[in-house]
Image 1 (cartoon, rainbow, N blue to C red):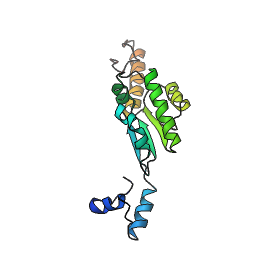
Image 2 (cartoon, rainbow, N blue to C red):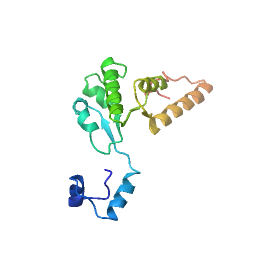
Image 3 (tube, helix red, strand yellow):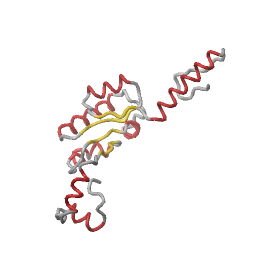
Image 4 (cartoon, rainbow, N blue to C red):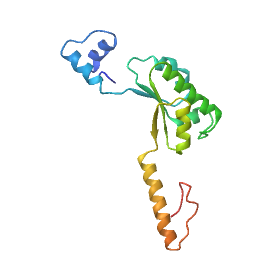
Length: 162
């Protein structure tokens, strides 16, 4: 990833340790400084291979995909489950021990994000643009309907009928 624009045989040789000729060597090195390599950890096989993954050269960080990881752990969407939280903490600690960033992409409440920080995360991706848009739009439409005397169903659910 960080060796772009190398392809084919030139990339294979470089990955095998063969040095590049100048000025290509300088170009690839400077170019790599502005790229991040972050690998998602989303399954039990990824957890099992974590030590090997963390030993990949030029790795900058690992990012937990909580939905896929909980499904792989057979506890789908149970983000407060001790098995999931222990797995997250283990990933965070091991990554930090290897000197790489460790984080999670989570769309839940702020308190849960803070818990991930306390468990060792140093990188958080908070929510997603569509989730934030949906939440804000829902709140505004509920306020408008409420002001007109029209009631809506439970506004805390993503399936709110407005």
